Length: 557
Image (cartoon, rainbow, N blue to C red; front, side):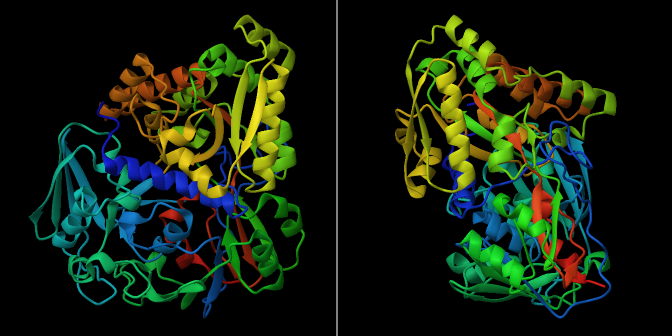
């Protein structure tokens, strides 16, 4: 096993949670969304849309607002939160050592500063004077206890994989924590701006034990809101924490009530009626309706998600890269966007969104990387000829799907049509939502399946977060694809702290992946959020999973 991935149960659990997040989002008639990183209409977009960095500033505070989520969290324990409902709540209650900002940059947070004196040493200076919601003061011991949970097999943290190269986490001063790595890892520090860097009171963790994060105990962190109450099956309420340390993000609302609305139509009707004031992940088939409503405003923002068809069987006809290339060229991705995604989005020419290259050393390098990828424009005739050259002649392929939503159905039908167009005989295998999730968790469930759909987002601003999932032996490498040159490039990217070397290695992984196409990139969409006419101030961005977005929402003027 290479340094970039781990075969441990913790790594597997992390990827399982990612798969479940995907399937649950779809199962609730929702689609994980993505964007190109542009400030307005993206190139190749099928209809005009505007990316909004920030909605209008609030005119003042608001007593409370209500927010919809498509499902109830199973827990708000940060070590077991790898899904959209718990993470968008926790982002406002618990904080990490670093912060992932809405513009997808990273900045200090509970760690006021950090240094990297050797390739395997990270030293964090903990911000003084920070208080937990119970009034106790943050210390280095709290940070150590919180981070070590991700290393403990008994915790079975979904964030264990980012800690795969961590040798030790130690208190080296009253407000200093040192993390020692077994080998250099260029992604470790970045992950501390997301769930892996979450800090909780050591005393609370010890007292709550296995009950930590459940409806009765909640959590005790340092964010702008504190845990209020949780009525199972109905709602979860947060209260403004007046002792919050950061005046720039002091909550403008006295309370936030999250209501669990699993049905998409019910959720959209609640927006229209004003029963709820807002929500993330707006159903694409409601875009037109909510753009024109007097009840509020629909906004789009930055994302890091790409819709892909996973090639899960390389022993059949799709084992030939030419057939995979032909299939991608035969898929009418623009048509999918128009029919299934409300016309909002872009055809994806990569497995990552363009904005993940924002940390390239310079704009010239970034632009060169974005251009230096093989393109597969819609060309059924050329695709059929390439497939014939590869020996395609009526072989059967099985496309797994589930009656999750109209968008999933449209995608599946389009892929099947493309397969037929290049000479294959597609069979659509529709399974329940529960069985669909097992495609991500159980290799046996993928037996006999050639293709299935996923929506894959990253938690850091680094293409390595996605491409690492395709390395030999990685749990997310669902088709068992293996390429020695790709693996070597991943290892080099992980070990490289130098921006030039790191970017170059990442670019090489992308070139290989897009030439070989172990997954077929379909399209991206922007993050979507609806704000009712009472509130404003949010920054639309996928960072809402880790950034305290609700603190910025206040009264509309």
